[in-house]
Image (cartoon, rainbow, N blue to C red):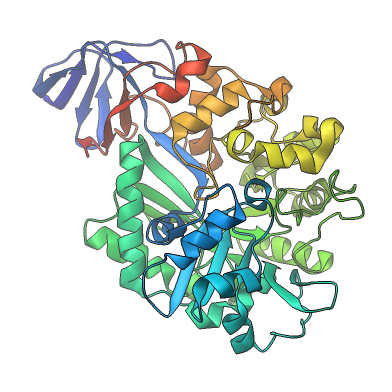
Length: 517
C-alpha cells in the first residue's frame, strides 16, 4: 500500500459532502482518504475543526495589495481625512483610499484637499471603487479645472456654479488613468504578494480577481503578466481565477469578441486561470450610482445610471457569450439587473453559469428569473455590517428587504457563493460568514434579518458555493477524496458555534495543495 504524505487526525472534519469525519489523508496535492491510514507524517489536531479552504468568489487582489501601501482614509470625519492627507509621506502624488461619505459626513472637495496637500497632487479613492476625488492640480492637468465635460457612463460632478468639485463618478475616473497608470508590473507583483500573505492568514486558498487589464478597474494592460510573474517568483500564495475587463476584448476573426490567440474562459490551470469576462452595467448603492427603478430614499429624484448605452451593454454581453466566455456582469440596482437578465435570457444557455456580481437590490421576480436562467448571483455578506447603514438610508425600509439576498436565493434552490469585494470592505471570510448569519450593521441596526442564513450555510457558501460559481466544484469546495487538498484548520466550527461568535473563530493553519503555508 502506498503511504499518504500527511495524515491529519483527531480533528472535526466538516466535509460538506457527507458525514463529518475525524481524519483526512493527503497524497501529493490531493485528498487521498477520509480515515486514518499509514502516512509519512502525522499531525494530531487535538480536536480542531477542518473545513475546505475558503474561496472568495469576488475580490480585487491587486487593488487590495496596492491599498496596503496607500494612505488609509477609512475615517469618521472629513477633518480626519484632510489630516491624513496633510500627514502623507513625501512625493509628487498623495494616493489615499477607503473613504465613505456616509461615515465621514460627505465627500471631500478639491478645495479641502488643496489646503491639506499644499500643492501636491491628490487622488482619494472611494471605498466602493466607483468614484474618486482629485484636487485642483489634477483637474488643471486634465483640463477640467473650471468646466466639466460629458463622460459616457460617468459624471464629473460640479457645484451650483458649474465648477467641478473634484468628484469623479464611474467611467469619469478613467480621465485620471493616463496620469497614474499603468502601474509597473513589479509593483503589482509586490501587491499580489502582500495580499496573498494576508489571505493565507484568513484561511483563503483561492479567489476570483474581479477585473483586470482595462477600464477603471484595471491597473495595467499587462496585468496578467503580473500574476504570471508572481507565480514564477513564489509570490502567488493562493489559487486565482482572473476576470478580464470587457474593455480589453476586441474582434478576433470568426471567434467574435476575445483576446489574441483565442484565449478565453478556461485557459490556465488549477493555480492561475482565465475566468469570465467582467462587464459593468451600473455603479454603487452607497455612492448612489446604481441604476434603480425607483428614486433613492435619501435623495429623491436620483435613480443612478447605467455605465453605457443599454443596447451596447447588451451587445457586449451577447458577443462575449457567443465567443465562448462566461460572463460576469456587475449589476447592483434592480434596473441594471433587469437589463442583465434580459441579455442572459437572449443568450439562451443556462449551463454556462453566467453571473451577476452583487445582485444588490433584487425584486422577488428577479430572484425567480435568475433561478430559471441558471444565473449565479454573487452577493457580499460583509456589506451588511460595514456599509449596511448607508445602504439602508439609500433604500428605505420597504426596498431594504430586497438588498443582498441570501435566504431567498437558497430557498429558490440557487447555489450561493461567498465573497467580499475586498478592499471595498474587510475581506476575512469568517467576518463575511458572521454577517451572513447575524445581519447587523456597524451601528447595531438589523440589516435584512429575513435573509439571514445558518452558520453551516454560510460556510458552504464560502467553499462549495464559490467553487460552483467558478464551475470548479469537481476540483474543490468540499473535503472529498480526489479533490485538491486545500484546507483550513479552525479553532471552532462556524456550523455549530454560537452565531454571535463566528467572527471570533481563529484560523490556525491554511493548506494549499497539500502543504501548510
